[in-house]
Length: 370
Image 1 (cartoon, one colour):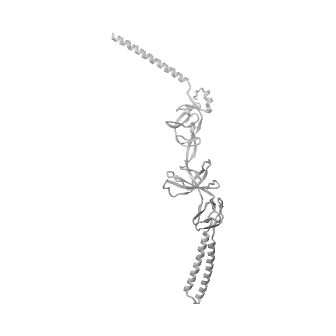
Image 2 (cartoon, helix red, strand yellow; image 1 turned 45 degrees about the vertical axis):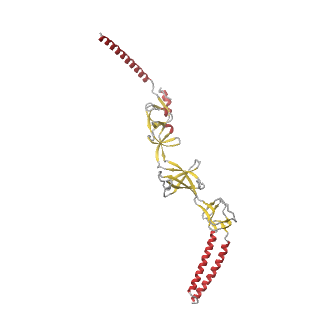
Image 3 (cartoon, one colour; image 1 turned 135 degrees about the horizontal axis):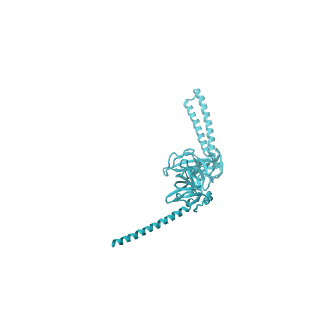
């Protein structure tokens, strides 16, 4: 009796399980049939080929324009200004008289010294003649000769003092702004004039941290005035033999023609300096790069059937940016076709049509995901 009940229960359970399995199988068969009849989802994108560019990494540092020559003239001797030939802001030529102090006292002393020299020279000549006839001792001749030399030295001292009261331009330069006037009295060692040398070149000094490779002489850098978009090539003409003890920077001097860029000394400029060797890198539009938590990647388009492509996700290492393009350090090669506009819609393995082939895709009755 109990066995019969168990057989009935088992039969009912088996029938239920078989019915459920049959129903599920029928649903899967219907779904498979529908999937086979439905077109594959695809996307339309624009595409570009990976190009290459010759690239060299640069940094921008501050530089300062230096004067070709700069000199502050001081007067060694005191005196009143009697002549002034240095107009503020004007150019003076090398050897031009700039300022003369009153030296009338020195002129009078010079006349007396010259007269003394003539007298002592005559005395020396007479003593020499007398010494030939044994009329005078050789000692007297030596004393007369020494007196002549002393007179000559006195003339030299006075002439030097006169020269020191006449200041001339040691090089062609522009005169700094001053307030000197004829008749003004200058004490000794007063600051008189500032001279800024005039040259056919502009010098720019700048510093680089020691972590960057040292530039070579004749290397080219770019100099750009502050708040200007233009830049000019300059050549390295000098390198400091040692690093700064305080900043650990190495100082350089670049030169460019004044006809190209003429700036006043102490002007701040921007200097664009190469810090790496030139290399050839792949470059792609920034629009083609997808960025997410997994990293940076692009979709390479591999040829498929009937003019379609397959999207292949390729991770890339990004470099510097230039305009709307980004350098690719690794992951891509020149000539590869990648998705550009519309790449955000893609996923790995997805069928892709290029924008110009949209009409063909519609004619082939392909469902396009926009």
